[in-house]
Image (cartoon, rainbow, N blue to C red):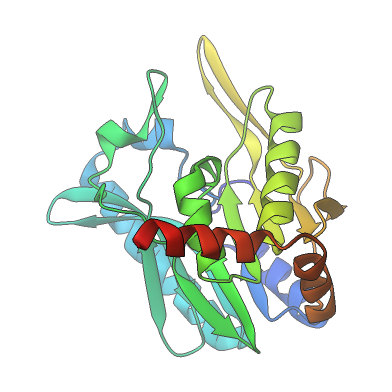
Length: 262
């Protein structure tokens, strides 16, 4: 789902979920910072308000997953023990799981590492199995790092789901990164990016959308423009098998790990 920031209870989200469900979607993905404010807004917001908003978003998404009988993957900010954590939740109709981002942006103008209390321990992306597909979730910034991507390959992920919040002049870089990762992983890759903007003079963050879906041969199969919308994509095990037979990258990565372990 390619959307701007949502209120804690949003008719827009209900509408988009209805559209997705009617088109046969089984899993819905929201971008980073779509549930609640953008990071630069959070830096100026009292933790008590962040906590309240996160709890409201959690309750609403859990309710929608039950209502539509769909799995929803959504990044949220949770506050535990007076500290904020950047988390990606997976809501099924009957329960929820979470993955805390391990590698955070630490740029002077966008320093999540200094704000969030997330653990910096060895990253390991969560894998869940849905209708026989092994599906991994990780945050957009984490897609840059080989160590994490190799762990995903070792886990033989068939699909990588990547909520992101990409801005500035990174359009082509992100397309190249997504295609490269799908190709070397022999997997499908779905990147859900935000739209909208945040103006913090003199800096303006413009989120350009371009949510996209790459197939295991490293090409973009479908994408959205810069407006609100949904992209519904299907996975084919035969395409995954063909890509892995043709190039064998996952097998090579597994062999390298065996040698390193020895």
